Figure 1: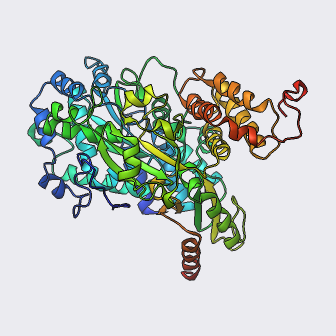
Figure 2: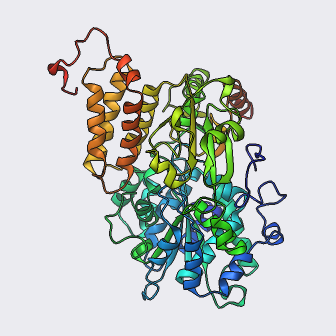
Figure 3: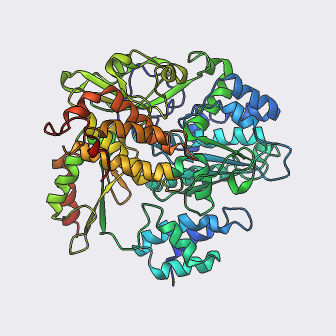
Length: 435
Length: 160
């Protein structure tokens, strides 16, 4: 089902079957070039498959933007251990709702992507780790998987190729942290979602301590098109080193929020104006979080920007998971900072002290400032606490909490200062202690 | 303890989904599916699943206390989960939650006396582009206004 009207500016590669009648069915999939990519991959050697993904400039869509072909290439194919394909469908980054529609509208595309990855690394089983809240998506994927077994696209000797591959769905049960790949793998084994110390990386010791390709839903969904249309065609859709399209989830103060597939490198202001229909009520743009809530905020004047991994990084933020959160001039940046920190505090797994304590302290101090009880030293304290978390945790959740906070204080410091009680003398050293 | 035939079939499928010697991997799906049927992760559920997976009840406790969706106490028949995370917050998610509290006469984290409704404030549920959003049990509701929420709750009340 589609929850928003498509935009005429979309370039529909991964979403090409969205809106077709019975787009979830294998018949529809096959009638629209389904498995054309996998058939091509079957005629290639594993090295050729990996080289094709490398040539496509496909980068991880979960948030980090790591080149997918390189990640696949790290899997030791000569290892005697079984190899696994794991799909991260634990979509939880605030502002992000693209994997849900990809699985809902075209489940077979995801499975075909897994099959091609399996062909590349010699995997015989794959798991789709779906967040617990997406129960109906589990049912959709289970039906698609069953259909493929019946028709010989999964199971033994797939399409007479001699290749065997099984796919299973697996549900999470409510944890943002399990979207982090090593925590996801712990959760897949029936444990608390605490991250693993790396190295070894999942490519070497992933699912059940075996070599594993682990990518986001959107990453796998891009793979069939790369093989169907060729790596060059995919790469050419975006700027250098940023191949393909991206499903951008537009949310916040815009007239037409929705999930839209646009070429990598699409201009952010144009995205807001022409795809999202501009700011609601004719208001003025104040700020954008360009890739989900863990990305540093951009001021309006910073938004004339090419939405690709490298350009957004150069602008001091991240393309992340493609969750574009648009804010108009009515937005209270202090309240926003509080809500973001409440989230990370709630989701911190508690393993690393800087994250467990840092998010809690930050939540308390930010709340105090928001409630008008802040101390003059609080704004620097917020910045210092956040900076002390950066790079000091085993997984990126600490950074994810710190980065938006640092940027909000830096770029909207006046709003934090205005919230301080006027009667307290500035810079009184006795007021530094945190209660 | 006994489960429904449908749930037993799900369990059997799960136990065949993981490599040999790795049946603990089925734990989280089993707990969530069992909770859906029983209403909560009761001591009885813990002991039953611990026995089947050959792990200790403590290993299950560790997991239950970690995951937000797993709970020891039953929720209402209709568990209303309102998202107030960033995308929803920007378009009225927090006000929607307050409205739900007034409408149901309970606070977030509570259940109505008749056990029909419970209310939760939840984190991002993956409906950001169609915010404000909420889930009633597993069903998504998008672009929810206070009026739409009233109609939804009234409709659920009438259905009894």
